[in-house]
Image 1 (cartoon, rainbow, N blue to C red):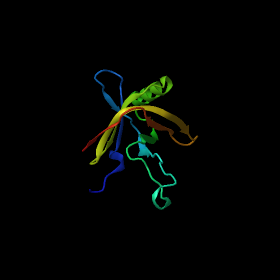
Image 2 (image 1 turned 90 degrees about the horizontal axis):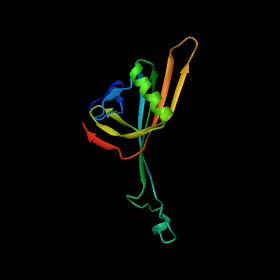
Image 3 (image 1 turned 30 degrees about the vertical axis):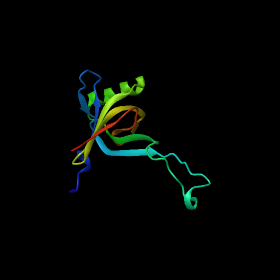
Image 4 (image 1 turned 60 degrees about the vertical axis):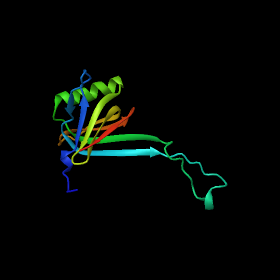
Length: 138
């Protein structure tokens, strides 16, 4: 795989309509996607050599996404704010160029706003998966 530009990674929120129309969260400067799987330890006194044993396929999978940037788009800012205050799961798409696209329901776990007296206003958002997340390779 060739080198990729981080700015090509997209975070999109659905507008809540049927069918869903996705709006790109504008102004992002940084994005992180974290895939996690909680393991189930089944180690006991009979475990070979005292090594830990994990139960395959029994853990809980999750995906978290974080991003930070500057305000650029009123529509995506309003969508995130509304969804946060309502604390409803909304469909999101996370596009990683030349890798794949994740899509599923997410809750906004945190939404931060900041600003310096001599700088721009910024925001940071963290999403937590709230159901099954699909993946399509690009």
